Image 1: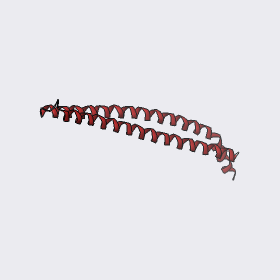
Image 2: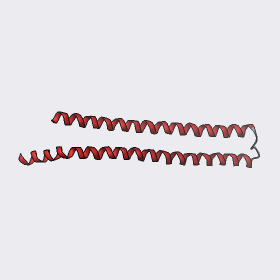
Image 3: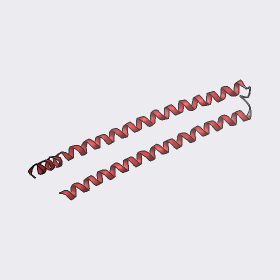
Image 4: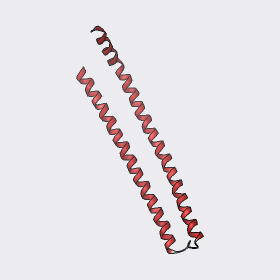
Length: 118
């Protein structure tokens, strides 16, 4: 019984350290998400530019580079790329927002647990 009380006391004393570590980790994760989103955005922009150039070269090879259908096709490709980019940004924001909400819920539950145990 005495050992159990000592272990619980040690855990309660160490809990602020764990909370501080978790908070720093959450900030690190948010920074990592931001960096990953930037890298992903640049990658997709390069891929989209490559697709655009490929389509233009195909049209040029066919001798259709100045035709209405080629311009419509290239415009459609650009619009599709923008749509994908916007959807992905929205999904990333939703995912990160849900993660922040979950972290806040966990923190709130931990705070409530501490108040109840006091």
